Length: 85
Image (cartoon, rainbow, N blue to C red; front, side, top):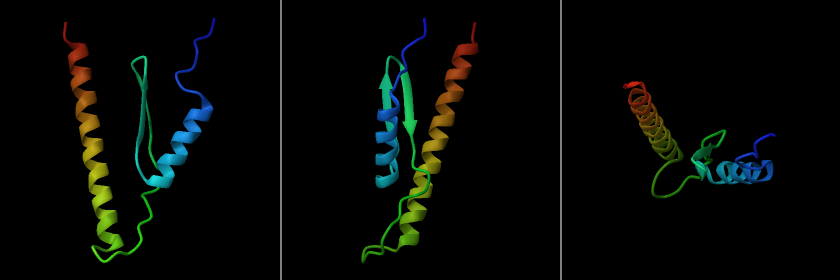
């Protein structure tokens, strides 16, 4: 007997649409399984009086790097925790 999918294709497509249109990561958790959907490209930012598009892109890239580092650290902690007797 096959196991039911954690998330349907329709739900995944909706998450991808939101991630791409809003430039955010969408996270879904069910039964301990986490599914993350990230935009393929950084968000397109229009010029504003508060700051330039380049500054917005740099901020997005910095936040993305911080998120990646946190996820890597968490994965390493879990790996080390699992290897202890």
